Length: 142
Image (cartoon, rainbow, N blue to C red; front, side, top):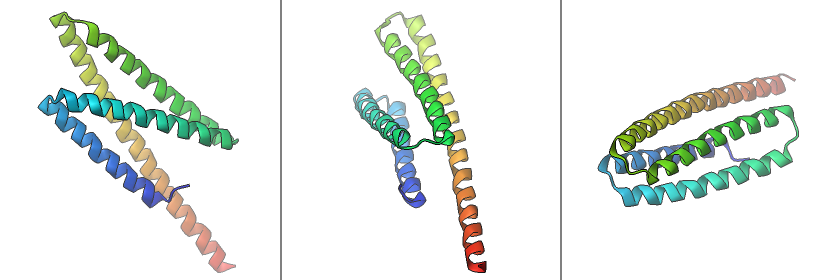
């Protein structure tokens, strides 16, 4: 298992990449966005494979709950991607505008979810640090 500091560093790097994607979207750099989408698809697949590997090694109920949560989130984002792919084939301007607005709202919702998950992750890190300090204090007292 990676150290919390390594995981937070990776999260920081990924956050920067997300900022770059948003900048490309604002610049309407389609080629860069399509390349990034392909990279994200690969990254998501790797993350899913990694989560699946970890899930097969773990047998406790907490891991099962995390797997259910991941599966639910993965399914929702798969639906969003499928909707987006479907929208790409439509050419009607009014429909395209409605779909663009829906896609933008989906992005806002995904960012809100990411921020919520980041808050939960930060809480878990703080909780783990406090638990470690408590364990160290108990060990020092014995």
